[in-house]
Length: 134
Image 1 (cartoon, rainbow, N blue to C red):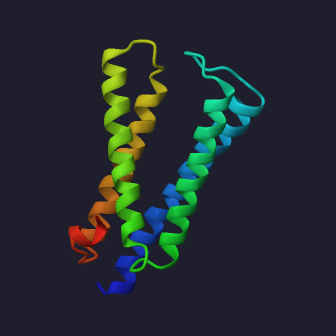
Image 2 (tube, one colour):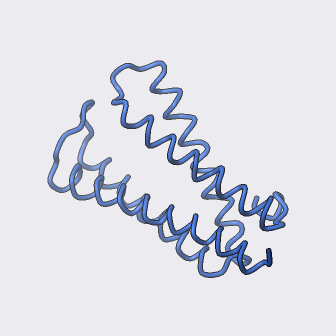
């Protein structure tokens, strides 16, 4: 396969991340932040708004990176690092804290799947060196 097809796969994974993070941003910003539908455990509306805005920022970075893969390699590496740290922290927190809803474990699992797909299509199929990402 050529570089164009490989970049298309990587671009599609980035767009999937854009959709995923935008949905999360909408839920945190509007549902939990502005309309204050409470989670168990409770979350302060300020933190929900900040989290929602951060997810919109993350979606925007992925959207920009999908437009030009070669120019956005460092951004893709940053997104990968964020998803890895987020996934590990949610999994560890859910193992040691029974208050956290089990839905967060599913969210971490989706983020880890996105990391695996990003790494696979960037390094294995895209012939991009790991040091170019980080």
